[in-house]
Amino acid sequence: MQAVANQSTASTASKQSSAYLADITDQRKKLDESIAAATKSGELSDAERAALVKMAKTTDALLKRYTADGRLDGAEYKRVLQSTQNEKAALEKMIPSGNAKPAKTKSSDRAVANHGRTVSAVQDAQSRVEGVLKTVKSYGSMTADQLKDLDTLASKGRSLLTDAMKDGVMTRAEYAKITDAQSAVNRQIRQYQSLPKKAPAASAQAEAQGLDVTV
Image (spheres, one colour):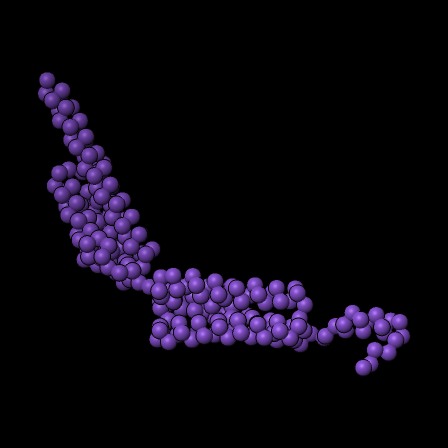
């Protein structure tokens, strides 16, 4: 009878130990996921993350020591649990309410400096690009394909500007893309203007026939 009682007690203790370990494992998994998510979103600084990693190592060492005999009793469980909760409390202090701390913003995602004036300048620049393109078309010195390319470039700048202002804020990255598209139009115009001019078809035919087309 005593042997049966001992076996029953051992079985109960083993099940309880397994339950303790399962709970600790689950809580640490959730904590690790929270830390990983906060790190990825930029909510934790390198120093904050390093502090949490140090605390986690302490808890891991504690758990390893207590489970060296293959089990975890009630008193040991409470100590490991308290250490885990200390980590969680530290994380929540770094990120109030779990996620209230604003994520750090990348430089390219920040609004341009002097926002109102910068946006106005970019809009004026786009208007000038459109005006220059209209003037170039009036000269009649470019081919249909060249004008099509210029229209495409100008349209890209116009589209980027429209998209950037949908939320009312132009970021540095958006500003860079818009101004680059605007500059591309001017560069392409200069490139086309530097190309050798083709002789008009009538003149070319006249030269081939040895005719004098001088007025």
